[in-house]
Each structure stands twice: as C-alpha cells, then as structure tokens.
Length: 120
Image (cartoon, rainbow, N blue to C red; front, side, top):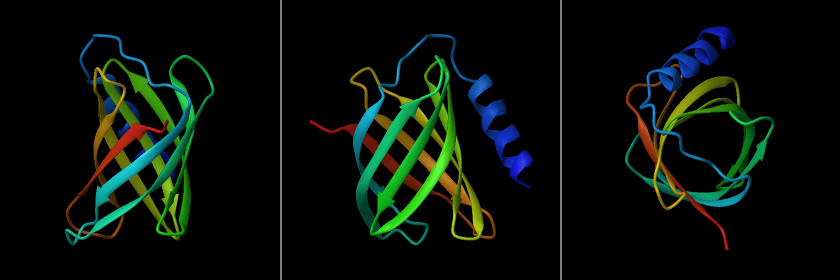
C-alpha cells in the first residue's frame, strides 16, 4: 500500500506544470481543515534531501507525522503516515513561497485542505 501512495504522489507531481518553483527548507506554519470541515493548525518542517526531494514533519494539534516529499514544477506532493493510516497531500507552490494543498487519508472519504506559510 505504501508503494501505491508514493507512486501516486510521484505521478501527480510529474503531471504538474513545467515552470520551475522552489520550496525552501525550514519551518512553516500550518493552517488547515479536517475531513469534517473543522480547522486545525500547527507547524511543519521541511528538510531538503536533493533538488527535488525532501522530508516533511508536521506537528498539528500535538499529533506528529512524517512524510517523504517531492517537488516538480509548481506541484509539491508528500506521502505520509498518520497513526496506522497512509496519507497523500498535493500542494500548489505559490510565488510567495506558500503552499496550498489538498489531502486525503486511507479509509476516509473526502479531502481536507492545508496551507503552509514560511515561519519568520
């Protein structure tokens, strides 16, 4: 199952626009909505592993999760583990460095939203 989600993340990233964007390593603030529409917030940290790959760690509402991520054009995708479930988030990289995303998790219907903004 992990291989399927990671492959999906890579396929979504490959389908992005050809314009090169960058995602900076560092800390981000997180604002999002859960599958039920309720809001959450927290922090994320991105550590670059290469020009296109990274590790991302979230801490939202005291829940920590870690994922592998990839940048392709203006698409930034991450596959992650949250408890016993696997998740996928695909962000659009904005010109100001923020990321607007939609996410889902195995075994659940629908999708949530998430925005990452570089912390000062």
